[in-house]
Image (tube, rainbow, N blue to C red):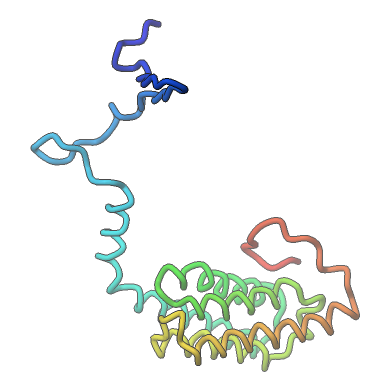
Length: 194
């Protein structure tokens, strides 16, 4: 198939080198959405504008996620940390971990990640103290409900750091007694290890 002249790369020659710039074959697929036949703005600009339009809903979404985390915690208190309750608690914390930074709550993401780590690596889920779960859920929800968005907020930062430290201490003791569950983690988990 013969390439048209506009599909060929441009070559700029200098005394000691050449710069070859290939044509962008996808340029012909750019969607024109306005009447003056100019392409849409940069996709990143469009995405930022879309996030800006939705940003007033971020707080509501995060409060809904806190309510979900709290409901699952109530199930865990009533029935123990086994089966679907453990999976649901992990998913609720994991969802907050994934959304919180985007929605402006970086320390809530850190605290939720700490809870995920405990749920994922505890050799015996029944030995995870309910106080540790309560501390994490209460901490995550407090950061979100108090609207602690600033990465430099020292209270939220200290809370997340303390939760990570307490979790690490708990896991160190638990894993020392049963080291086999700590296999290498190759990627983010969606459910805790069975």
